[in-house]
Image 1 (cartoon, rainbow, N blue to C red):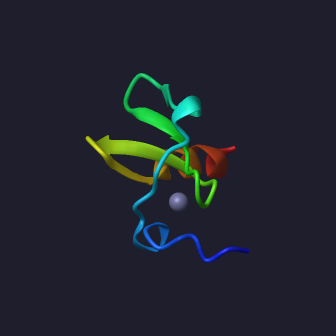
Image 2: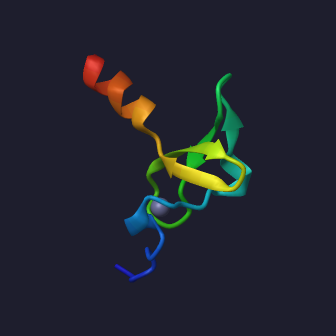
Image 3: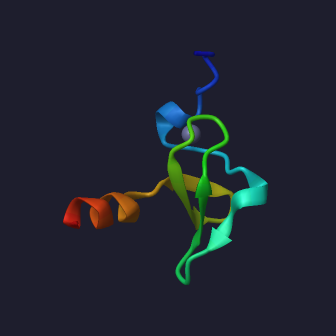
Length: 59
Ligand SMILES: [Zn+2]
C-alpha cells in the first residue's frame, strides 16, 4: 500500500468528484485516498462519515 494518506490520518479527506452525491443533508462520497465514506461538513472540509457507521451498526 502506498503511503498516500497524510491528511486522512487527521480525518481530512478528499472526495472522488465524480461520485459525490447529495443525501438531503450533506454531500457524501468516498475518499479518493482511503476509500472510506466521507461527508462534507463545511466548504472544503470532508470528514469520515459517522452517520453511515451508526446506520450500519443499527441493523
Ligand atoms: Zn481519506
